[in-house]
View 1 (cartoon, rainbow, N blue to C red):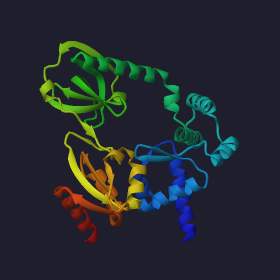
View 2 (cartoon, one colour):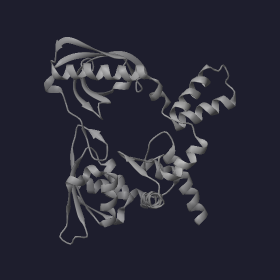
View 3 (cartoon, one colour):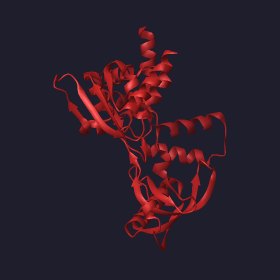
Length: 299
């Protein structure tokens, strides 16, 4: 039993130190564990001197944790050393297995594309500035050579930008050709050109909302749930944006969360992961949504 637990702890440690973000849901699915077990493992890491960091809905282990500091000093490159190593490998005309493995290891452990690509960072900054002007002066813009993964095309998009999202990494726009409100990623546009034409469709602009569970949409749905102490502690740790919407109950052993969400998927994952610790009070649609999910588990 302890052997299996140790296997999971080590596997989780490896996931938390990779150069990518895993959400709680992804970690639970990959390790085949419950959300409660995952939180226990994270708490175990904290108790043993690891620095557990939270980024939105994702977790990682800080490489400045004492254990890693000693290990990395012996085995790892500095970021500058890793960048030099990657540049050397890029110039080597060798596709051997060893060279490919070295590239993969470097890419897994370091953000080398971001460290190396100064031009990319400068272009994104210029695009943000142009889009800011388009919003400020209510003018149309062209997103030049926008790469869409959905249609697998690269094309120019004539839009009316009206709202930055996700820390200025995305822009909400009304697209003229499709007559639809869409969210565009700044990393997928080559450049932005400000047009002299003013907005003509302001009444059709629909703002998009991002709820505390990091789901976005134009619709807002109110939910109400009652939490015991375990669920309350885990909720405010994993989703601190919910704190303003939580009120303590009179018994001082329970708390009530009442807030708007963009869809039920995010909140339902939390509820179903701690089903014995959460009581769904409303609304009726959310109650029915949870009942349907539970009935599928029982089949």
